[in-house]
Length: 487
Image (cartoon, rainbow, N blue to C red; front, side, top):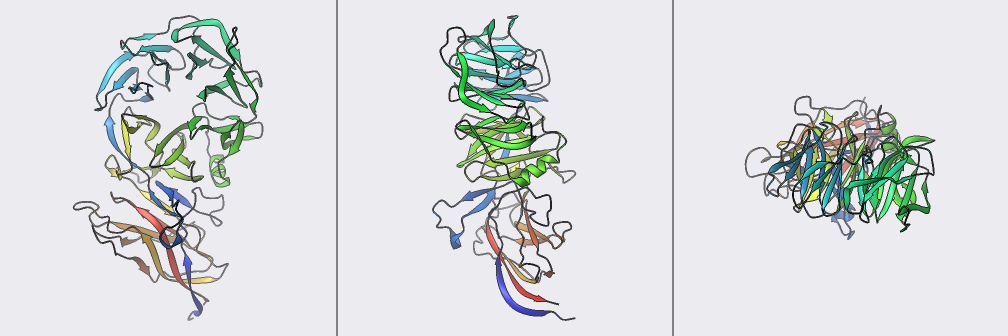
Protein backbone atom coordinates (compact mmCIF):
# COMPACT_ATOMS: atom_id res chain seq x y z
CA UNK A 1 0.00 0.00 0.00
CA UNK A 2 1.50 3.40 -0.90
CA UNK A 3 2.26 5.80 1.90
CA UNK A 4 0.20 8.91 2.48
CA UNK A 5 2.45 11.85 3.15
CA UNK A 6 0.81 14.63 5.10
CA UNK A 7 3.55 17.23 5.31
CA UNK A 8 7.30 17.71 5.30
CA UNK A 9 9.26 18.77 8.37
CA UNK A 10 12.76 19.31 9.62
CA UNK A 11 13.49 17.87 13.07
CA UNK A 12 16.61 18.90 14.95
CA UNK A 13 18.94 16.07 15.93
CA UNK A 14 19.86 17.03 19.48
CA UNK A 15 23.51 16.80 20.46
CA UNK A 16 23.52 18.43 23.89
CA UNK A 17 22.82 15.91 26.59
CA UNK A 18 24.18 13.61 29.23
CA UNK A 19 24.97 9.92 29.19
CA UNK A 20 23.42 6.88 30.88
CA UNK A 21 20.38 5.17 29.47
CA UNK A 22 17.21 5.05 31.56
CA UNK A 23 15.94 1.68 32.73
CA UNK A 24 13.56 1.83 29.80
CA UNK A 25 15.58 2.77 26.70
CA UNK A 26 12.22 3.36 25.01
CA UNK A 27 12.13 6.60 27.01
CA UNK A 28 15.77 7.71 26.77
CA UNK A 29 18.69 5.78 25.29
CA UNK A 30 21.30 8.54 25.27
CA UNK A 31 24.98 7.69 25.53
CA UNK A 32 28.15 9.73 25.27
CA UNK A 33 31.26 7.55 25.24
CA UNK A 34 34.66 9.27 25.01
CA UNK A 35 32.90 12.53 24.14
CA UNK A 36 32.68 15.57 26.38
CA UNK A 37 30.44 18.57 25.88
CA UNK A 38 32.08 21.97 25.40
CA UNK A 39 29.69 24.90 25.95
CA UNK A 40 29.82 28.02 23.83
CA UNK A 41 30.13 30.56 26.64
CA UNK A 42 29.54 33.47 24.28
CA UNK A 43 26.24 31.90 23.17
CA UNK A 44 27.16 33.11 19.69
CA UNK A 45 27.82 29.69 18.22
CA UNK A 46 27.02 28.58 14.69
CA UNK A 47 23.28 28.47 14.21
CA UNK A 48 22.72 29.40 17.84
CA UNK A 49 24.09 26.07 19.06
CA UNK A 50 24.96 26.06 22.78
CA UNK A 51 28.17 24.14 22.18
CA UNK A 52 29.44 20.86 20.78
CA UNK A 53 30.74 17.41 21.64
CA UNK A 54 34.48 16.88 21.24
CA UNK A 55 36.80 13.93 21.73
CA UNK A 56 37.98 13.01 25.17
CA UNK A 57 41.78 13.15 25.32
CA UNK A 58 43.91 10.31 24.07
CA UNK A 59 46.97 8.81 25.71
CA UNK A 60 50.60 8.12 24.98
CA UNK A 61 53.02 6.17 27.14
CA UNK A 62 55.05 8.41 29.44
CA UNK A 63 56.82 5.84 31.63
CA UNK A 64 56.80 2.16 32.57
CA UNK A 65 57.46 0.60 35.96
CA UNK A 66 56.26 -2.77 37.31
CA UNK A 67 53.39 -5.08 36.46
CA UNK A 68 50.78 -3.89 39.00
CA UNK A 69 50.26 -0.16 39.46
CA UNK A 70 49.29 0.68 43.06
CA UNK A 71 49.63 4.45 43.48
CA UNK A 72 50.77 7.67 41.82
CA UNK A 73 51.63 10.95 43.53
CA UNK A 74 53.13 14.32 42.63
CA UNK A 75 54.90 15.91 45.60
CA UNK A 76 54.48 19.53 46.58
CA UNK A 77 57.96 20.10 45.19
CA UNK A 78 57.15 18.68 41.76
CA UNK A 79 58.58 15.15 41.97
CA UNK A 80 56.62 12.20 40.59
CA UNK A 81 56.35 8.94 42.54
CA UNK A 82 54.75 5.67 41.50
CA UNK A 83 54.34 2.45 43.45
CA UNK A 84 54.19 -0.70 41.32
CA UNK A 85 54.41 -4.22 42.71
CA UNK A 86 56.62 -3.87 45.83
CA UNK A 87 58.73 -0.96 44.56
CA UNK A 88 58.60 2.82 44.92
CA UNK A 89 59.76 4.48 41.71
CA UNK A 90 60.61 8.10 41.00
CA UNK A 91 59.82 9.16 37.44
CA UNK A 92 61.89 11.92 35.87
CA UNK A 93 60.52 14.62 33.57
CA UNK A 94 61.86 12.52 30.69
CA UNK A 95 59.83 9.50 31.81
CA UNK A 96 62.76 7.53 33.23
CA UNK A 97 61.89 5.35 36.26
CA UNK A 98 64.37 4.95 39.14
CA UNK A 99 63.72 2.55 42.02
CA UNK A 100 63.78 4.36 45.38
CA UNK A 101 62.69 1.69 47.86
CA UNK A 102 61.03 -1.65 48.53
CA UNK A 103 57.70 -2.10 50.30
CA UNK A 104 56.75 -5.09 52.42
CA UNK A 105 53.63 -5.73 50.31
CA UNK A 106 53.24 -6.22 46.58
CA UNK A 107 49.51 -5.72 45.95
CA UNK A 108 46.71 -3.39 47.01
CA UNK A 109 46.33 0.37 46.79
CA UNK A 110 49.01 2.66 48.20
CA UNK A 111 48.15 6.17 49.41
CA UNK A 112 50.73 8.97 49.70
CA UNK A 113 51.10 12.48 51.14
CA UNK A 114 54.05 14.79 51.80
CA UNK A 115 55.02 17.57 54.19
CA UNK A 116 57.66 19.14 51.95
CA UNK A 117 60.43 17.10 53.56
CA UNK A 118 59.03 13.59 53.77
CA UNK A 119 56.60 11.51 51.76
CA UNK A 120 54.53 9.12 53.84
CA UNK A 121 53.16 6.00 52.16
CA UNK A 122 50.58 3.57 53.57
CA UNK A 123 49.51 0.23 52.10
CA UNK A 124 46.91 -0.97 54.60
CA UNK A 125 49.49 -2.86 56.66
CA UNK A 126 52.65 -0.78 56.92
CA UNK A 127 53.68 2.88 56.72
CA UNK A 128 56.86 4.12 55.05
CA UNK A 129 58.85 7.35 54.89
CA UNK A 130 60.66 8.58 51.79
CA UNK A 131 62.99 11.45 52.70
CA UNK A 132 63.10 13.88 49.80
CA UNK A 133 66.51 15.42 50.55
CA UNK A 134 68.38 12.11 50.73
CA UNK A 135 66.13 9.67 48.84
CA UNK A 136 66.22 7.40 51.89
CA UNK A 137 63.32 4.96 52.15
CA UNK A 138 62.39 3.34 55.45
CA UNK A 139 59.49 1.46 57.01
CA UNK A 140 58.00 3.25 60.03
CA UNK A 141 59.03 1.14 63.01
CA UNK A 142 57.21 3.08 65.72
CA UNK A 143 54.92 0.45 67.32
CA UNK A 144 52.16 3.06 67.76
CA UNK A 145 51.87 3.63 64.02
CA UNK A 146 48.54 2.12 62.90
CA UNK A 147 47.66 -0.01 59.91
CA UNK A 148 46.20 2.59 57.54
CA UNK A 149 44.75 2.76 54.07
CA UNK A 150 44.76 6.58 53.78
CA UNK A 151 47.13 9.38 54.69
CA UNK A 152 46.81 13.17 54.30
CA UNK A 153 48.81 16.18 55.46
CA UNK A 154 47.25 19.07 57.39
CA UNK A 155 48.94 21.88 59.36
CA UNK A 156 52.24 20.05 59.89
CA UNK A 157 50.74 16.66 60.72
CA UNK A 158 50.34 13.47 58.76
CA UNK A 159 46.86 12.11 59.51
CA UNK A 160 46.14 8.39 59.14
CA UNK A 161 42.92 6.44 59.48
CA UNK A 162 43.09 3.44 61.82
CA UNK A 163 41.86 0.69 59.54
CA UNK A 164 38.77 -1.15 60.74
CA UNK A 165 37.85 1.49 63.37
CA UNK A 166 36.25 4.90 63.61
CA UNK A 167 39.53 6.55 64.59
CA UNK A 168 42.36 8.52 63.04
CA UNK A 169 45.84 9.29 64.38
CA UNK A 170 48.33 12.09 63.84
CA UNK A 171 52.10 11.91 63.68
CA UNK A 172 54.56 14.29 65.32
CA UNK A 173 54.88 17.69 63.68
CA UNK A 174 56.77 17.32 60.39
CA UNK A 175 57.93 13.83 61.32
CA UNK A 176 55.94 10.91 59.97
CA UNK A 177 58.22 8.37 61.63
CA UNK A 178 57.00 9.31 65.12
CA UNK A 179 53.51 8.46 66.40
CA UNK A 180 52.17 8.73 69.97
CA UNK A 181 49.55 6.17 70.97
CA UNK A 182 47.55 8.94 72.68
CA UNK A 183 47.36 11.11 69.56
CA UNK A 184 44.10 9.78 68.16
CA UNK A 185 40.51 10.88 67.85
CA UNK A 186 37.33 8.92 67.34
CA UNK A 187 34.89 10.28 64.80
CA UNK A 188 32.03 10.14 67.24
CA UNK A 189 28.92 11.23 65.37
CA UNK A 190 28.20 7.64 64.34
CA UNK A 191 29.72 4.25 65.24
CA UNK A 192 30.55 3.50 61.59
CA UNK A 193 34.10 2.73 60.47
CA UNK A 194 36.28 5.53 59.10
CA UNK A 195 37.18 4.24 55.65
CA UNK A 196 38.57 7.34 53.94
CA UNK A 197 39.95 10.81 54.70
CA UNK A 198 40.61 13.88 52.59
CA UNK A 199 42.27 17.18 53.48
CA UNK A 200 40.47 20.17 51.99
CA UNK A 201 40.87 23.84 52.94
CA UNK A 202 42.94 22.77 55.98
CA UNK A 203 40.06 20.62 57.21
CA UNK A 204 39.77 16.86 57.60
CA UNK A 205 36.87 15.25 55.77
CA UNK A 206 36.28 11.96 57.56
CA UNK A 207 34.27 9.52 55.44
CA UNK A 208 32.54 6.75 57.34
CA UNK A 209 30.40 4.00 55.91
CA UNK A 210 27.23 5.83 56.99
CA UNK A 211 28.22 9.44 57.73
CA UNK A 212 30.73 12.16 56.93
CA UNK A 213 32.20 14.38 59.65
CA UNK A 214 34.48 17.40 59.18
CA UNK A 215 37.21 18.33 61.70
CA UNK A 216 39.46 21.39 61.94
CA UNK A 217 42.63 22.37 63.78
CA UNK A 218 41.38 24.15 66.91
CA UNK A 219 44.85 24.48 68.43
CA UNK A 220 43.84 22.40 71.45
CA UNK A 221 47.00 21.44 73.35
CA UNK A 222 45.78 17.93 74.13
CA UNK A 223 44.75 17.10 70.55
CA UNK A 224 44.60 19.73 67.83
CA UNK A 225 41.65 18.50 65.74
CA UNK A 226 37.99 18.85 66.70
CA UNK A 227 34.65 18.54 64.95
CA UNK A 228 33.30 21.54 63.05
CA UNK A 229 29.91 22.35 64.55
CA UNK A 230 27.17 21.60 62.06
CA UNK A 231 29.52 19.84 59.61
CA UNK A 232 27.91 16.43 59.94
CA UNK A 233 26.50 14.69 56.86
CA UNK A 234 24.28 11.63 57.04
CA UNK A 235 25.34 10.33 53.65
CA UNK A 236 28.36 8.10 54.16
CA UNK A 237 30.79 6.62 51.68
CA UNK A 238 30.20 3.46 49.63
CA UNK A 239 33.82 2.99 48.54
CA UNK A 240 37.02 3.85 50.40
CA UNK A 241 38.83 5.17 47.33
CA UNK A 242 35.88 6.99 45.73
CA UNK A 243 36.27 10.45 47.40
CA UNK A 244 38.24 13.05 45.45
CA UNK A 245 38.82 16.80 45.48
CA UNK A 246 37.79 18.93 42.51
CA UNK A 247 36.82 22.51 41.76
CA UNK A 248 37.30 23.71 45.33
CA UNK A 249 35.17 21.00 46.96
CA UNK A 250 34.91 17.24 47.55
CA UNK A 251 32.98 14.48 45.75
CA UNK A 252 32.04 11.00 46.89
CA UNK A 253 29.84 7.97 46.19
CA UNK A 254 27.32 7.63 48.96
CA UNK A 255 26.10 4.92 51.28
CA UNK A 256 23.54 5.52 54.03
CA UNK A 257 20.59 3.99 55.85
CA UNK A 258 18.37 4.41 52.79
CA UNK A 259 20.72 2.82 50.27
CA UNK A 260 23.76 3.59 48.15
CA UNK A 261 24.88 4.69 44.72
CA UNK A 262 24.20 8.44 44.74
CA UNK A 263 27.08 10.79 43.89
CA UNK A 264 27.35 13.92 46.03
CA UNK A 265 29.50 17.00 46.12
CA UNK A 266 29.80 19.33 49.09
CA UNK A 267 28.59 22.92 48.97
CA UNK A 268 29.94 24.23 52.21
CA UNK A 269 28.99 21.39 54.53
CA UNK A 270 25.83 20.46 52.65
CA UNK A 271 25.66 17.43 50.33
CA UNK A 272 24.39 18.23 46.85
CA UNK A 273 23.34 15.40 44.56
CA UNK A 274 25.12 15.47 41.19
CA UNK A 275 24.26 12.02 39.84
CA UNK A 276 21.22 11.62 37.59
CA UNK A 277 18.34 9.16 37.83
CA UNK A 278 19.76 7.41 34.77
CA UNK A 279 23.21 6.99 36.33
CA UNK A 280 21.77 5.90 39.66
CA UNK A 281 19.66 3.29 37.87
CA UNK A 282 22.81 2.11 36.11
CA UNK A 283 24.78 1.86 39.37
CA UNK A 284 21.90 -0.04 40.98
CA UNK A 285 22.54 -2.90 38.52
CA UNK A 286 26.21 -3.23 39.56
CA UNK A 287 27.08 -6.17 41.78
CA UNK A 288 29.88 -4.23 43.50
CA UNK A 289 30.23 -0.54 44.34
CA UNK A 290 32.74 -0.87 47.17
CA UNK A 291 35.73 -1.08 44.80
CA UNK A 292 34.91 2.21 43.06
CA UNK A 293 37.93 4.46 42.52
CA UNK A 294 37.53 8.22 42.31
CA UNK A 295 40.00 10.68 40.83
CA UNK A 296 39.92 14.11 39.23
CA UNK A 297 41.65 16.08 36.51
CA UNK A 298 41.43 19.33 34.61
CA UNK A 299 41.94 19.69 30.88
CA UNK A 300 41.11 22.54 28.48
CA UNK A 301 38.82 24.14 31.03
CA UNK A 302 36.91 20.95 31.87
CA UNK A 303 37.05 19.89 35.53
CA UNK A 304 36.26 16.20 35.72
CA UNK A 305 35.42 13.86 38.60
CA UNK A 306 35.96 10.30 37.41
CA UNK A 307 34.56 7.13 39.00
CA UNK A 308 35.81 3.73 37.84
CA UNK A 309 34.17 0.43 38.79
CA UNK A 310 36.72 -2.39 38.32
CA UNK A 311 34.32 -5.27 38.95
CA UNK A 312 31.83 -3.92 36.43
CA UNK A 313 34.44 -2.67 33.97
CA UNK A 314 32.89 0.81 33.68
CA UNK A 315 34.17 4.39 34.00
CA UNK A 316 31.87 7.39 34.48
CA UNK A 317 32.84 11.06 34.46
CA UNK A 318 31.13 14.20 35.71
CA UNK A 319 32.03 17.61 34.28
CA UNK A 320 31.56 20.04 37.17
CA UNK A 321 31.26 23.02 34.80
CA UNK A 322 28.46 21.66 32.61
CA UNK A 323 26.86 19.28 35.16
CA UNK A 324 26.86 16.58 32.46
CA UNK A 325 27.95 12.94 32.77
CA UNK A 326 29.75 10.98 30.08
CA UNK A 327 31.42 7.61 29.87
CA UNK A 328 35.12 6.92 29.32
CA UNK A 329 35.95 3.53 27.88
CA UNK A 330 38.70 1.54 26.23
CA UNK A 331 37.52 -0.67 23.39
CA UNK A 332 39.25 -4.03 23.57
CA UNK A 333 40.97 -4.57 20.23
CA UNK A 334 40.33 -8.33 20.37
CA UNK A 335 36.73 -8.61 21.60
CA UNK A 336 35.50 -5.20 20.45
CA UNK A 337 33.83 -4.71 23.83
CA UNK A 338 33.98 -1.45 25.77
CA UNK A 339 35.87 -1.81 29.05
CA UNK A 340 36.82 0.33 32.03
CA UNK A 341 39.09 3.10 30.85
CA UNK A 342 42.79 2.41 31.24
CA UNK A 343 43.51 5.57 33.25
CA UNK A 344 42.51 5.01 36.87
CA UNK A 345 44.34 7.64 38.96
CA UNK A 346 45.44 11.07 37.74
CA UNK A 347 48.00 13.59 38.86
CA UNK A 348 49.62 16.69 37.37
CA UNK A 349 53.39 16.97 37.18
CA UNK A 350 56.01 18.44 34.81
CA UNK A 351 53.21 20.47 33.22
CA UNK A 352 51.55 17.23 32.08
CA UNK A 353 48.33 15.43 32.96
CA UNK A 354 49.51 11.95 33.94
CA UNK A 355 47.59 8.82 34.86
CA UNK A 356 48.39 5.40 36.27
CA UNK A 357 47.10 2.42 34.32
CA UNK A 358 44.25 0.47 35.92
CA UNK A 359 46.17 -2.81 35.90
CA UNK A 360 49.83 -2.21 35.05
CA UNK A 361 52.59 0.12 36.16
CA UNK A 362 52.37 2.16 32.96
CA UNK A 363 52.07 5.93 33.34
CA UNK A 364 50.06 7.55 30.56
CA UNK A 365 50.28 11.14 29.38
CA UNK A 366 46.88 12.60 28.54
CA UNK A 367 46.53 15.12 25.72
CA UNK A 368 43.60 16.72 23.91
CA UNK A 369 45.60 16.59 20.67
CA UNK A 370 46.10 12.81 20.78
CA UNK A 371 43.31 10.76 19.20
CA UNK A 372 44.26 7.18 20.08
CA UNK A 373 44.70 5.15 23.24
CA UNK A 374 48.44 4.67 22.79
CA UNK A 375 47.90 3.61 19.20
CA UNK A 376 44.67 1.67 19.77
CA UNK A 377 41.47 3.23 18.39
CA UNK A 378 39.85 5.87 20.59
CA UNK A 379 36.23 5.04 19.81
CA UNK A 380 33.74 7.88 20.28
CA UNK A 381 30.01 7.22 20.42
CA UNK A 382 27.00 9.52 20.67
CA UNK A 383 23.56 7.96 20.97
CA UNK A 384 21.18 10.85 20.39
CA UNK A 385 17.77 11.65 21.89
CA UNK A 386 14.70 10.38 20.06
CA UNK A 387 13.53 11.83 16.76
CA UNK A 388 9.76 11.61 17.05
CA UNK A 389 6.45 13.41 16.80
CA UNK A 390 4.28 11.50 19.22
CA UNK A 391 3.34 8.15 17.72
CA UNK A 392 3.14 9.49 14.18
CA UNK A 393 5.02 7.58 11.49
CA UNK A 394 8.01 9.53 10.13
CA UNK A 395 9.62 8.89 6.76
CA UNK A 396 13.32 9.77 7.07
CA UNK A 397 14.26 11.29 3.74
CA UNK A 398 17.59 12.83 4.72
CA UNK A 399 19.96 12.92 7.69
CA UNK A 400 22.25 15.93 7.91
CA UNK A 401 25.10 15.92 10.41
CA UNK A 402 26.91 19.10 11.42
CA UNK A 403 30.48 17.87 11.98
CA UNK A 404 33.76 19.71 11.62
CA UNK A 405 34.98 18.42 8.26
CA UNK A 406 38.30 18.42 6.44
CA UNK A 407 40.14 16.95 9.43
CA UNK A 408 41.77 14.05 7.59
CA UNK A 409 45.45 13.28 8.07
CA UNK A 410 48.03 13.69 5.32
CA UNK A 411 48.61 9.95 4.90
CA UNK A 412 47.72 6.62 6.42
CA UNK A 413 44.85 5.69 8.71
CA UNK A 414 42.67 8.75 9.07
CA UNK A 415 43.56 10.31 5.72
CA UNK A 416 40.01 9.74 4.47
CA UNK A 417 38.00 9.58 7.70
CA UNK A 418 34.35 8.66 7.93
CA UNK A 419 31.68 8.57 10.59
CA UNK A 420 29.47 5.52 11.06
CA UNK A 421 25.74 5.88 11.69
CA UNK A 422 23.09 3.37 12.70
CA UNK A 423 19.57 3.66 14.07
CA UNK A 424 16.92 1.87 16.04
CA UNK A 425 13.16 2.04 15.54
CA UNK A 426 12.18 -0.19 18.48
CA UNK A 427 13.42 1.66 21.54
CA UNK A 428 17.16 0.91 21.12
CA UNK A 429 16.58 -2.83 21.45
CA UNK A 430 17.76 -3.74 17.97
CA UNK A 431 19.77 -1.73 15.46
CA UNK A 432 20.30 -1.33 11.75
CA UNK A 433 23.65 -2.00 10.14
CA UNK A 434 26.12 0.88 10.15
CA UNK A 435 26.41 3.14 7.15
CA UNK A 436 29.65 5.06 6.53
CA UNK A 437 29.66 8.78 5.74
CA UNK A 438 32.91 10.54 4.73
CA UNK A 439 33.73 13.70 6.69
CA UNK A 440 36.42 15.05 4.41
CA UNK A 441 40.06 14.59 3.57
CA UNK A 442 42.50 17.22 4.79
CA UNK A 443 41.30 20.66 3.79
CA UNK A 444 37.85 19.57 2.55
CA UNK A 445 36.16 22.00 4.89
CA UNK A 446 32.99 22.36 2.80
CA UNK A 447 32.25 18.62 2.77
CA UNK A 448 28.61 17.88 3.61
CA UNK A 449 27.81 14.85 5.75
CA UNK A 450 24.52 13.48 4.44
CA UNK A 451 22.55 10.23 4.22
CA UNK A 452 19.36 9.69 2.20
CA UNK A 453 16.30 7.44 2.08
CA UNK A 454 16.57 5.96 5.56
CA UNK A 455 13.12 4.38 5.77
CA UNK A 456 10.35 4.98 8.25
CA UNK A 457 9.93 4.93 12.00
CA UNK A 458 6.44 4.32 13.41
CA UNK A 459 7.22 5.25 17.03
CA UNK A 460 10.34 7.39 16.98
CA UNK A 461 13.94 6.70 16.03
CA UNK A 462 17.26 6.78 17.86
CA UNK A 463 20.36 7.64 15.81
CA UNK A 464 23.81 6.57 16.98
CA UNK A 465 27.03 8.10 15.68
CA UNK A 466 30.39 6.29 16.00
CA UNK A 467 33.82 7.62 15.12
CA UNK A 468 37.14 5.79 15.49
CA UNK A 469 39.56 7.50 13.10
CA UNK A 470 42.75 8.91 14.72
CA UNK A 471 41.77 12.53 14.07
CA UNK A 472 39.97 15.21 16.01
CA UNK A 473 36.20 14.91 16.07
CA UNK A 474 33.78 17.74 16.79
CA UNK A 475 30.07 16.96 16.63
CA UNK A 476 28.00 20.14 16.56
CA UNK A 477 24.48 19.06 15.67
CA UNK A 478 22.25 17.79 12.92
CA UNK A 479 18.75 17.57 11.54
CA UNK A 480 16.49 15.03 9.94
CA UNK A 481 14.27 15.91 6.98
CA UNK A 482 11.12 13.84 7.29
CA UNK A 483 7.69 13.41 5.84
CA UNK A 484 4.97 13.05 8.42
CA UNK A 485 2.31 10.63 7.36
CA UNK A 486 0.93 7.11 7.40
CA UNK A 487 0.86 4.04 5.24
